[in-house]
Length: 176
Image 1 (cartoon, rainbow, N blue to C red):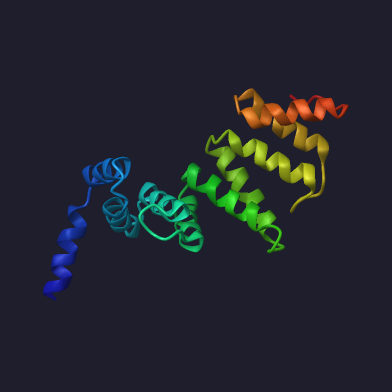
Image 2: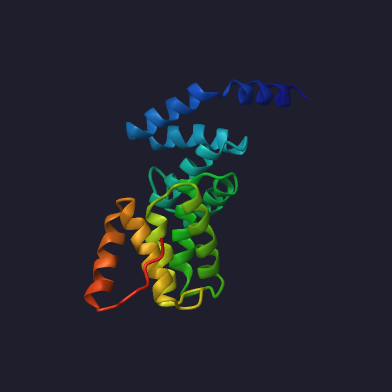
């Protein structure tokens, strides 16, 4: 009973200032300390902390790189509407597409969610799925529309893809 009470006090003691301290620790390269704080906050369903736990595992900062753990934490944050986590999760599924027949469909879903959250780079990546017909019916016009939208928001890769499609001589009906 005493252990539960102490744990409860420690958990209640974590706050926004703890999150800010964890960010400072992360920026100073003290990844383990940052991870420990983010992890405690993440267990309490803090989406930003969950995203940061995923980020640390995805990049192997202070810990061994563990994409399964990164994906787990990104998904927790993504389900709570964290746009960056939605985008990173979509990218992970996109990369898994060659090995998992449903991964491209999951990537599409999370790219769409990250677009709703305002992540401009997601337009380009979703456009790539349509251009290649990965998890969606191949549709070059839809791909162009998505690349164009990303380019309008200033995403450099989307700008390049618009230019490439023009260079290939593709003519698309302009959709506004």
